[in-house]
Image: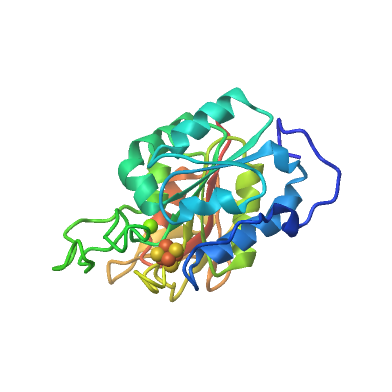
Length: 288
Ligand code: SF4
Ligand code: MG
């Protein structure tokens, strides 16, 4: 079981977490893979479904609670972290999860998100980032790249996007991770680490929207995977600027994996600024 949540010894399976609702995302939506990963991993938590709550905001991803056979609330735009904060602080016996998207979390809900992270409320926040507003049919979002052509920005977006991992680290979130919808193994590893973390956890999940932003979640060319849990100091590897002015990692443990000290906020931030996509756990630190 998780800290504060009563343990449950009974057997549970992914099917126990499915509901009788028709899943109403577009065919090929990355949300299906994320739902399957979450339903597959929930039985591992060793707690009852009745002690789990999913609170969502508004957007495609926010239909998530209908499909989880736990308690849940499809709440109001951008306010899921605020509602979940009330629940998590008054009911320590619950494992509280927030499901939100890039528009919901970072535009209308940006304020609620950063303060939930700052306060280190015991919430696990899953930010499905498809870099577009899907539900309202494809407007640019706070994570859309500069120059993004959409119906609302026919000549290309002028806005500079947020990097959600950097933003969360800037708010000193005690747990920050990133994973891809298409990599179930790593997504499950990051979700497991987030679940075990006591405090706020932000997990950015790159999620494909084949209808309005196909491939727009940067299918990573040369992803770097962070390996955590190794008690080594970050001096053994560093993030440096190379001759081309790009940030890169030196002395990683292999070509595409880096052992990273998840207590090291500065190093985590530097990793979040790399020009290549980094996935895994950036930060997992203890804080009241
Ligand atoms: Fe998924 Fe995009 Fe369809 Fe929304 S619009 S359900 S994000 S594919
Ligand atoms: Mg979105």
